Length: 375
Image 1 (cartoon, helix red, strand yellow):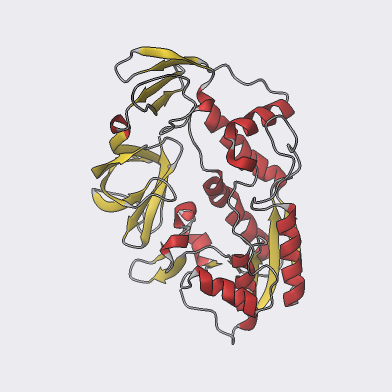
Image 2: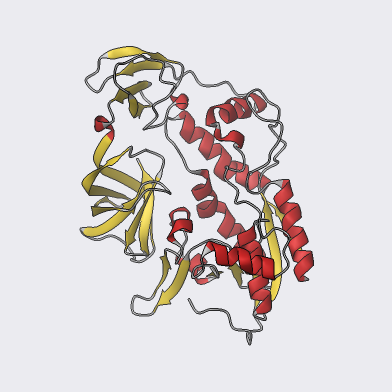
C-alpha cells in the first residue's frame, strides 16, 4: 500500500479506540497533511452486567471501555480534529453478543473480536465515513494491504512486526473494505509506534494494550453467559450429559456443555492418573469426550463461511499455512474444496486442539489467502 502523501487533500476517517495504536495513526496522518475526522464506535455498556453474580464491579483493562472513549476524545482535541462517537450498541448485541451466546451454548468456542471485525466494525465505520465526507478509513491494526494489478485484487498481508500481527482477526474483510482502508502501522514496530505517540505529545503513549474482550471481564465466559441470560430473563438451557472416553466409556457427568472448550484440562470434575483434556463436544447428545494430550492432536479440519482475499475462490488443491488460533504458529497444510462453502485442510503434522467455532486463516507466506470457521 502506498503511504499517504502530504500533498493529498483527501479526508480520512480514523477509527479511534482510545489506545496508543489508533492515536498514533491519527497523529501520523495529521502530520502527513490529511484532513482527519475521528470516529469511535460505542459497542457495549461496560456497566451493564457489572456486579451480577460472578461479574466484577470494575471494568478496567478491556477494549472499548468508557475510559477509552474519553481517551480517544482527548487525543482528538489534542490533535485538533473533529470527533464523533457512533452508537452501535444495538447492532453489536444483535450481530456479535447474541451469536456468541448461541455458539457457546451449542458447545462451540467463538471469537467475538473476529465476529465484530467481520460483521460490524468495518462496515459501520466505512458507512459512517461516507456519510461525513470521507471515502477511506484508517485503523491502528497491525496489518498491510495493497492492490495487486496482476491479480486485480486487494491483498491483505501480515505486518512487519509479526509479534503484533492482527490479520487473524481480519480475514473476513471484503475487497471493497480493503480498498477503502489504510493500515499505517503495517511497516512499523510497536516500540516505534509508542515513541511516535510520545513525540506527538499524546499522554497515553505508555498506555497498556487492552487484553480482555470488551463484554467479558476477567475472561470468564461462563460467568458472562449466566449473567447475560439472567438479565434477558432467559433460562440456561439444560445441556448436562456424560463425560466419556473416545471409546465411549462413561467417566462421569457434567452440568452443561457450555462449561467446556476443546483442549480444556481444568474443571473436568473427574480424577485420573494421567492428565485429561476435552477432545470433543457433542451438542446433540450433550456428551463431552475427554482423553489424553496425544488424542487431542488432529490431522485435518473442516471450515465453512469462507472468505477469499488473495484468490476469487478455491477451485482445486492448494498448499497453505494455517493459523487455528491467534497465537498459533502457522502450520503447513493442503486445502481441498469440499463444496460450495466448505473446505477440508489436511495438516502435514498433527495440530493440537482444533476447536469448532474458532477461525482457520490460510496464508501463503505473509499473504492472507482467506479463511473460514472451523466446524
